Structure formats: C-alpha cells, structure tokens
Length: 195
Image (cartoon, rainbow, N blue to C red; front, side):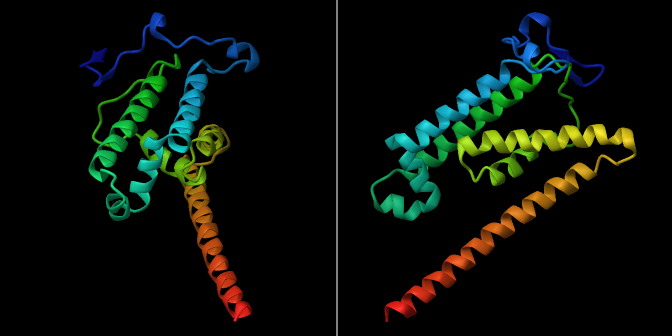
C-alpha cells in the first residue's frame, strides 16, 4: 500500500472502499459513505461505556483526580494505560475511515504532522469532551474546513480556516471561564444571603 517513489500510500482499491449505504442518493455529488454511520455508532458506544458502566466511571474518576481515585481503591495506572489504548483505537479507526472513504485521499510521508489530528482538539473542546457532543462539533469543524477550502476560489487564503477555528476555540474557552466566574459570584452571594 506504499508508493516509495512518491513517499505516500497508494490509492485504496475499489474493493476496499467503504460502501455508500445509499448516502450518495441523499447527498448528491458528495463522497458521503458508511464511514459516518460507523463514526456515529462508535460515539454512541463510547457514550454508553463512559456514562453507563463501572469501567467508564473509573476512567472519569481517574481523569478528574488520580489521587482521589487511588484513595477510593481504583487502579489509576491501569486506567491511564487503558484510556491511551482507547484513544489509539479511535485514532486508528478515524485514519482508516479517511483512507478508505474512496475520495482518493492519500497519506503522505512528510516531516510535518497531518492536520487531522490537530482538528480533534477544537472538536473535543466544542463538544465539551462528550462523545455525543463531539458528533455535532465534528460536523461543524468539518464544514468550516471544507468551506474554507472552497473559499480559495474567491481569493481568500487557506489560512483563514485556522483563524476561524482558533477564534472559535478562544471564544468557547472564554465562555467557560466566564461561566466559572459567574458560578463563583453566585456562590458568594448565596453565602452572604444565608448568613
């Protein structure tokens, strides 16, 4: 699957491309395929595991405070290793879905890192690290990236994509900080009112 002359992967053969599952009829002239269904199902599965199982509770507890979870009898080292394994699983599935989408995308061997991994950071921030919120945040960031790519036809530089994405990250982070301060101020007024 590797082309040594071009230092990139070969195009995925037609027999290995993810089937369309009728999405090409719904979204005409697009490359929509079953990969989005697989991604949504994996997000729902992650949500159920994190919020409805003991294992998910342990992962969240270790993420919030490793020392407190260790005091409660949880093996925080095991949780850290398993969370990394799960993150690697999702990253591998994401890369596989991109490569097998049938869009002709190839993975190049270059000295810079691909942008897909860094696009996960604003998606996780906008989705508030909730697997169901990540679905909508990923669609939003995907629209920004694709729209920014097509804006080059009208003379916009491609860097405008990163500017808009970073502005979204800053404003969403700023809104969380403002909410934190508002909650603190409300707590102070409640204490004064109770006295």
